[in-house]
Amino acid sequence: MLPPEPAVDQIRSVDAAAHDSGVRIERFQPKDFVKREYIEVPIDTTAIGNLSQLETFFERLANNSRVMNVTEVTLTPVPPGQWRSKFVVTAFALP
Image (cartoon, rainbow, N blue to C red; front, side):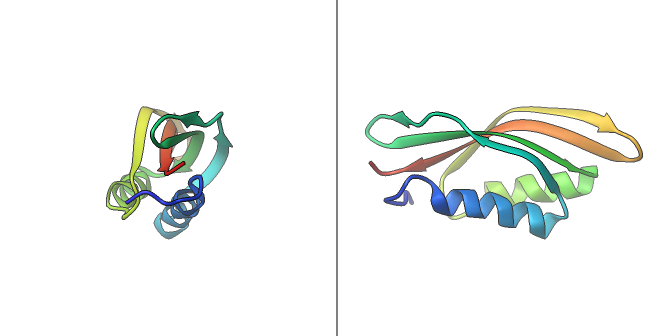
């Protein structure tokens, strides 16, 4: 389901998924919109948590009722027992 406004619901969904998973969002930087028959809103994101928290976070994004893609995922260990994940979450909206 695509919302009529540019990705406001998806942005809130990412924030809620992070909060509910115990993940801390370190960076959340929307890039330029890509307009086609729909609008793509790519967002550079960095999140920190343990592996279990990050897994739960990504599961919540995957099971969200709004269409979102997560790409370019990297994981880097951050002592003690934490991981930094950098990725692009792309939200979609109707023009």
